[in-house]
Amino acid sequence: METKIIEKTLVAAHSFKTTLEKIGEAVGVVPEQIYNELQKQGLEPVGPQIWNYIGCDGKMETEFQLNVCVPVAKKGTDTEFVKFVELEEYNCVSHTFTGAWSEFAQVYDDLLGKMSKEGYELKWTNREVYHHCDFEDQSKCVTEIQIEVAS
Image 1 (cartoon, rainbow, N blue to C red):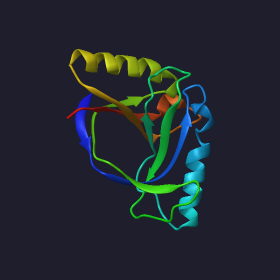
Image 2: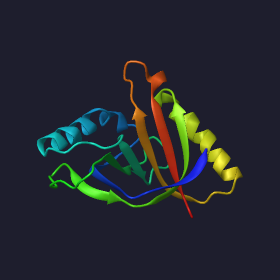
Image 3: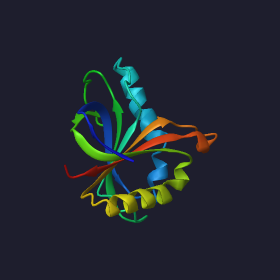
């Protein structure tokens, strides 16, 4: 666990409302559609996917805003599905986790417990940066969890 500031990042993003119960429906599907749009526009991704959670309280049934983002070097043309936006600078506590996404509930519980003990003030947004995705063997997945904190 470390505190860091993530610089502004230009991304191709698709935003929608979902719940933790339904989030699995977006896995693979939404990123593929973003990558297809980038390919149509002749744009290359320049970093790993970023899933930006806004208003997620950890309860399975609570609806929240999810922005699935792919970093790009230059802005493309907005479509009905993809918008090119700049993610603002992000002050966060970061933790890199290697393992299955099904273990995230415990990882978040542990991380939030440590943050509470250390007196961090949460801003109630978080990001997951998918550095390595292995759908065959999720124990090999590498995900950076970033939880926004007050500066």
